Image 1 (cartoon, rainbow, N blue to C red):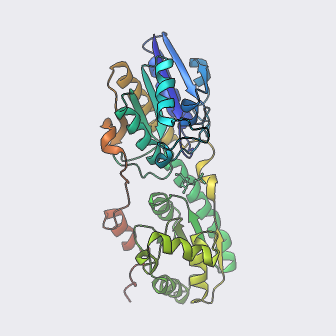
Image 2 (cartoon, rainbow, N blue to C red; image 1 turned 60 degrees about the horizontal axis):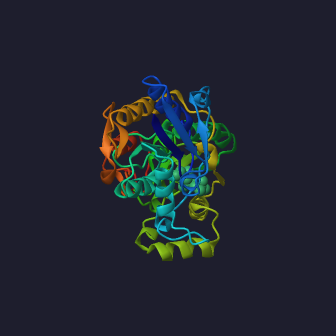
Length: 362
Ligand code: F6P
């Protein structure tokens, strides 16, 4: 009998269900002798032994369904070694559940924080296989995470919709895109949506350069300007501050988010009206796009193969179009950021997109 524990942890995204379905379908293809323990709300379910016994039927009909049938929660890695309010040792509790249920393996779907804990559980002697999920696409070791393309699709759609109203009103529109500390979703949705200015955390901007790009467009007879701004975008000036100083500055100014700061900076330099649109968590919602369904299914099938072959301690990944495995210790704690010198940035600049870092040539 194969006993598999499964959990989804951290912020949800599209194709989590598709990935779990892929794992389960591929395992059932090999044997019917499987017990699946679905831990509820991420690591919490493992800590408090809160699970449902699932069968292949539970994974039918969920390929296109967003969210996660297991539920999820954020359990910060830095608090894993801190006992809970009742003094429970969380790591020991997770190990206890694993051994009590006599599991052969834990299948963990998550992003950066989740992978740090997954690697810790591996170091503690548990058999772990992970799958890379997050809309942010910031997981080191894989070219793409599932959820990313679906989020790009939604953010692009927002920019598309903004285009028409921006034109009607001759306005400057800022669309704030999710992505935590990195700019992957913003970069791709910005290019796909035809944004004129893209601001990323990896390329600190100068408000004067941003204003200059807007004025140039107006002078050239363009009725509107659209900015795709990453939620982690930062000005060159603020990038020099410590994290604490920056947080205090943002709190003092009472900006709900960075887009409002950028709006104020633009409004004080330009005549055109400025508006902010924040699609927020819609970017994590709804049905996965076909690309994510395919990627999640491939990764799920690959995870099943590793389990079957008793090859534990890996994250399944996609590199150069091929599905592969990466040791968890190589993944944990590393962030995959946009390289400001990457070809995609140069190509975007060549098409006239400003990243707010350097003035356009006359
Ligand atoms: O990691 C996914 C993500 O959506 C980020 O893009 C965003 O910064 C964060 O999660 C939002 O977290 P929460 O759902 O806890 O508000």
